[in-house]
Length: 119
Image (cartoon, rainbow, N blue to C red; front, side):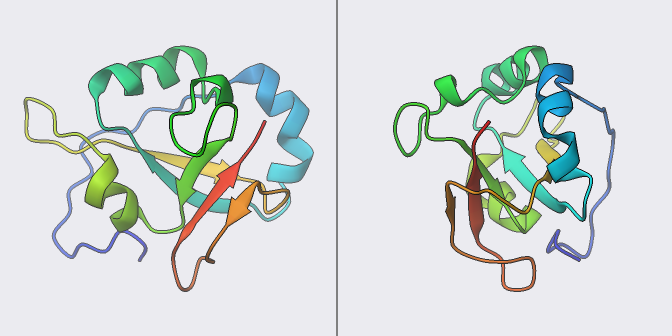
């Protein structure tokens, strides 16, 4: 429902988990988490997240160490924050995010918008 497309084909799904962050945050995330989305504007950014996880020290938006920007609706992330690869596929991260705390939030799952979560 949050994808916003009627004709969508999911080509591949990979699980990426930062074990140290998961151990620290699992109790907040496993209790009714938000399913949220994150797009990267380049393959290099995506590779960095896959290799090292979401690192707030690499944050480009909101200032240094601000947090990771996540969208309630995939269409928001896809609309301006996802790159297209050589096979004409768009890439998004599907994330489990704790409902609190948030560094910034301007929406909810029903109306859309974004949240910034820290580590």
